[in-house]
Image (cartoon, rainbow, N blue to C red; front, top):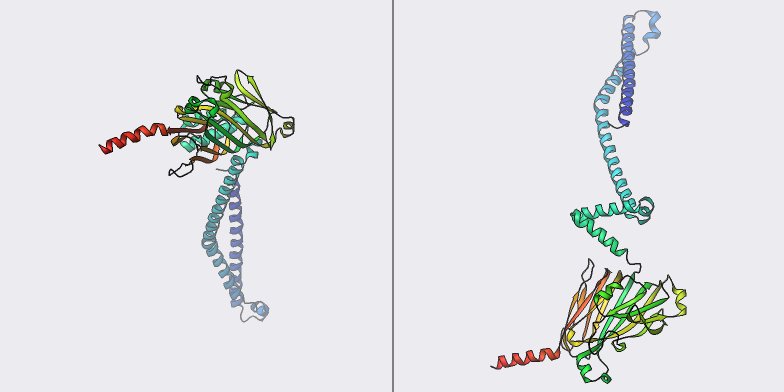
Length: 388
């Protein structure tokens, strides 16, 4: 029972007592009027009662009796039913208002970022988020571990990229390197363009030999990019011909490039005194680097190393002896990437991958190819089989 119910019961008792007293008074008046009507009838011949007899006591008594009867009938029938309907209507209206207010309060408290940050502690926010995720997917262990892993992973990255465009161009190597190198290697040019917040005035671009070295430098945000290229006999790990940076450009300003060694990595440093005025501001970052890859490696991988919104990859292999390219994307996103590949031999030798959504590190694409020189023996074998 709520605190308001005893008070409401007291009011109803007071109301009924007042109503009973009023009805009793009207009943008494009705009785008195009937008595007066009887007295008036008994003194019809007495002249001293002439003024008394001039009052229509019987009509007044009948009218008073009608009022009392109507009051009793209305109060114990019509008014009670009306009160029940009114009470139900008010309860329905109050329930609807309460539900709407609760829903709006939930929206304000749970979906307004400012309210959450002001009213809830970090631990409470984590508790609410875990509970919501558990209800959404229906698995407590998966929800808890997924949330903890995702939050800890995102917390490692302070940089956010947007409108990320990566163009990968596969081209023949310089003929000056010799025919043997031309037959075995291709030059990969990577053009990058995206929006980001500039947080440092010195940028580094390097080439690492394996995934272990790549992961060792993963948390060092002073590296603008880290190209991974397995060393070969022709182009060993520290060979300067194996990796080169053509330009680094911020807001249209070309940075000065110097080849240096850092942490045992074949690297370039990009600097410019004007970068200081762009610190902690959103800028457009552009750069190009190139590396040597073996044709018989049959693949090239490009990854996104920061949380990024809206990504586009383009692979251009025009002028090469590649017969066909397959694309394998591994985006950490709830949306599916759009992939466009050449349909006929006359189409441009370009593959495009587009995803207009947030992707998380280490999302990316793997480009796998088949060479013309590898297809030709299969064609000849098929021709021999068909002619025979």
